[in-house]
Each structure stands twice: as structure tokens, then as C-alpha cells.
Image (cartoon, rainbow, N blue to C red; front, side, top):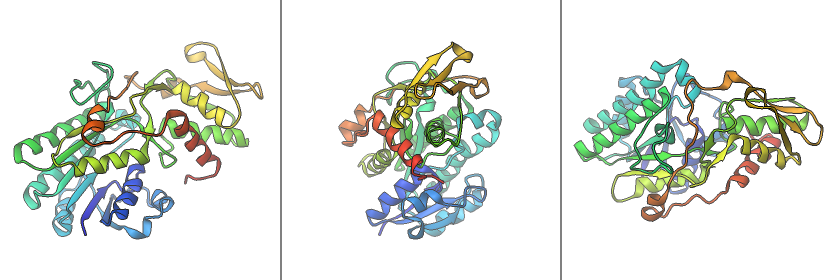
Length: 338
């Protein structure tokens, strides 16, 4: 039985990945830091909470990481832990860097000394492309991060590559574009929208306040993306892969599709910060721009090219944008989340 440690076990991807690995016969250890969400609602929703072994695992504490890895002797480590909210990284850049960059370096260096044959996966991100240098973005596209989150993740990405090349370690990296699900945190824009639309429909909320509605993202279904993560780790050669849908949509489109799910449509009035969205059914303003949600530096367009993953891994995103929005809104209508 293979042993796998998944860091950041309380997160969206970790819940889906835990389920996948358990189905494949793994013994799964879930790393959790002291200050994280201890309701474990995602693990409970996916039915794996009582099937994994929880570990105290803090990326900022070297001794904790060292002793845990030495004791478990894992066959695979999936590093999904991070300060994962881009907006927060602007107000907490040092914490973000220590977790997202130094934490990865700590794990890699410990593995080099304690168990160098362990397969390692680093959760890289499309935010590393930031101010994009070409469209679409692939594994060879130059990086230009636009947030402390993106900068820290880029450092961790290159460190993973460095340990792979310098010490011949099986260190892999998945540059995943935005991937969503009903397990997404409420601070992320897609879940914020799906929750707000379901609450507006139920009469529990009046208005969805939003930042830049014209940002374009490549949105896929998280459940499929963890399958890609697993395939990256089973590839004979450790490498870097982009996982994406190859399609891009605006935040505005996500809002429009979400309201369609509840049988409504949005009509837009005004411009820029004065723009509002009105319900065609009620005539009320249900969407409003709030400048407080604008980032100091914005990433306007992300569009991934998953050709390499399709050719070498046989992985392909299947769930279309409209279906993803429908899945999320219907889940929140049913009270799926926390």
C-alpha cells in the first residue's frame, strides 16, 4: 500500500484528491496546520474524513516537517498547502512568502536528506503568468506575476524545478488554471457569486458586490483537475504541466450564467464603477461594483494551453463553463457548502 501525504488537507483540491487516492488503494495522510479550518466540512462532504490520517503539518516549522516526513516515509507528497487567496497576499506578503515559497523549500530540502525517492508534487498556479506575455499560456510562456501570491508561487515553482534538475528528484509541478467546485472557499469570486445568486433567489441577500467584472479566466472543474494532478505524478518522467480548459470567460459572464440557473437574467446599466446589474424579473439592482474589491495590480486575462497534458498524459478538461456554473449554483441552492 502506497503512502501519500497531502498538505493543506482542509482545502478544495485536497478533498477531491484524498477521495481519488483512497479509491486507488493509498494510505492517505492529511497535513493540517493549527490555525486552519477544523470543521473538515470538505472532507466530510466527499465522505473521506474518517478514512484519512490527520497530521500536524505546518510549512513554517522546519522541525515539524522534518520529524513528520522522517516518521511517515511517504511514497508521494502532494503539496497543496498555501496562503491561497490573492487579495490577502497584498496585505500579508511576508506570511504569504513564508508559506508559499519557504514552505516548499523546506519540504524539498528535507526530502533530499530523509527520503529522496519520494515523489513530490508542487501546486503551481496560472497567477504566475500575471501580466501575460503571450496568449494562450503554456509551459514555455515567460512569467510575470502581479501579486505577492504569484511571486511566491513562482519562486516555489522554480525551486521545484531546481531540485529536480540538481538532485535528480522526482519533483513535479502542475500549473493549474482556475478550477472551481462547490467545495471552493467563499472568499473566491466564483463561490462568492454562486452563493450570492442562491441567496438572492431565496430572498436571503439583496445585492452581489463585485470588483472587476471584465477580468477573464480559464475556469475548469476541480474534480477533474485532481485527476490531472495524479496523472502528473504517475508520469514516468517528472515534469511541469499546464492544466486548463483552453477557454476564457469574464466574471461578468459567470454572473450572467449563474442568474440563468435560477431562471433570471441580468441587464446592465451604467459604466465602470457606476455599473449595476438589474434583475429582469424584479427590476431590482442585484449586482453592484464595489471599488474596494479591486486589486492594486490586476491580472486581466488568463488562458491556458493544455496541449502538452493532453498529448503526454491523456488528460483533458471535460466539464464546460456553463455546466460548471450550474453545478456550483445548484449545490449552493441545496445547501451543499459549509
